[in-house]
Image (tube, rainbow over all chains, first blue to last red; front, top):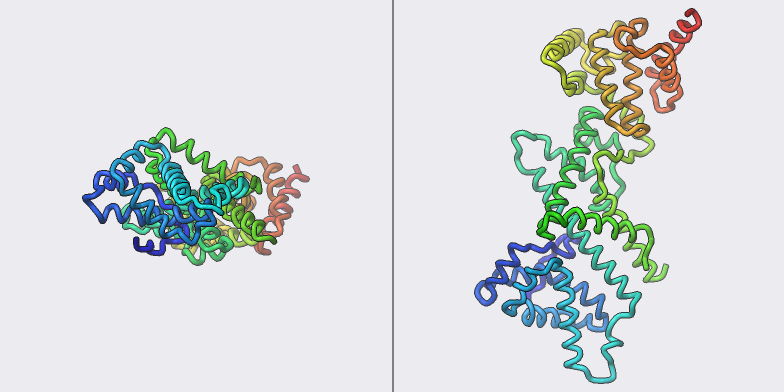
Length: 249
Length: 180
């Protein structure tokens, strides 16, 4: 398997592309390109999960993931089952865990026991937090990407869309994208040629609305069921606020 | 810091940033720094009257009045809020539109936010700028206006010119109150 092209750091755990997944599921053994794309898409987060969950196997990660993709992802019917699962990520993660455990059992030879190879409970919790944080980053990264694309596309009725993106990027998004302080008011209005405080406020409010709309769309695609989107975003908020509130368990 | 401690801190920082972003709400006031208030006030003074006042939704008849007032002001070289508010004889019609514009701002923004403070200050400023004709553009009772003007005088982020206008208005209102 070729290593994935370097995605943006924030794309550590890509979104579930259900359309692509369904296509891949139907094309097992028929469409090598579609499958290859799918494998490349999920390779990076799987590797992170694998290294964190089975640290002693870190040096075999490439080989294990190669085998996993050939054995699991390429096996006819497996992807179709994934399609019926509510949470694809959990399905994929559990499948990888089971695959590795089976492999370890098959290859079990003293002196290293399976228990010793696996992480201890505190590490397990941290891995779960890392995994969920990576998931959150991917959702936000995808939302920002879509918003930027939307803002930079030509809109006859809203010629100020590039300005909306720039203001959003420099104020709410900058601390995340560039690990920098948000731009102060004077610098922002000068840089973005904003004509009055009211215009600054309108651009910011519109940007926030657009971001939330795209976030909603991204989660809706991921969950596929509109009724679960709100719940999913709330779970996402609770997890992040718990983690940022130093509630590490 | 231990490796584990560092890792936890990094996780926490990452989560905090993401949390702020997904909890965005257009009604949540922007956390501007200390320099925002004077910068916003300067920006508002320099802003084009036409650009901001045309944002007010009016009836066709009032819209016509607004356009005429803006055209008249432009003919007299009055383009910005600063031109209007510090004019020797500012047009009452235009001051009224400006007052309505800022009053709307005080209703939109969360009380106490930088945006609200600037909108409230300029609301008072438009009335104060009318001088003796303040009653023509606002129904605000003189005692309430005085209270607001005294609040404005205390704001440390005002430039000298604006502070002077408020001080003069405070003197005038206090004199008028004593004479009543």
